[in-house]
Amino acid sequence: MHFLIDYNLTGDAVLFWGTLSAEGWLDLLPIRFFTFQEVELPMDSSDRAVWNFAQTNQMILITANRNMKGDDSLEQILRQENTPTSLPILTVGNPDRLDESNYRQKSATRGLRPETQKFTLPR
Image 1 (spheres, helix red, strand yellow):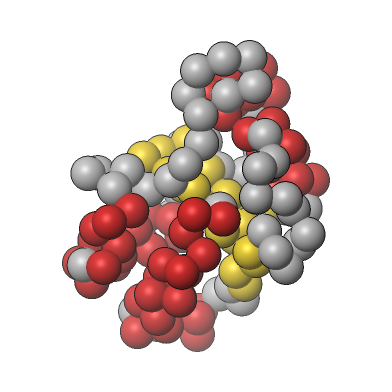
Image 2: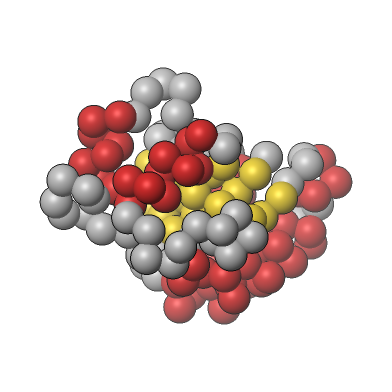
């Protein structure tokens, strides 16, 4: 299971990874996090470019900073291009709460058991 960590969550990825490890998920699933830098994706990539990259490379996008308005917004892309085989997107509703272990734990569990194509973690 591969996750693409949006550029604005790169620092939080270490905390998220620690939570996955503490919860035992790393013993159950082959999980790998990729940053924009590792995959050579520019930080200013459009939502469409990020979504297409994640889908093409079989990655679940974890984001907190994607656009919801306009033709190139993540919301519009999902409406136009999402299919039953598309991988989900995990949107962190309040990235400041990733410092809270309980919030990270809920995020990790929800991210590993996606029920919809797009879901947002609570604020």
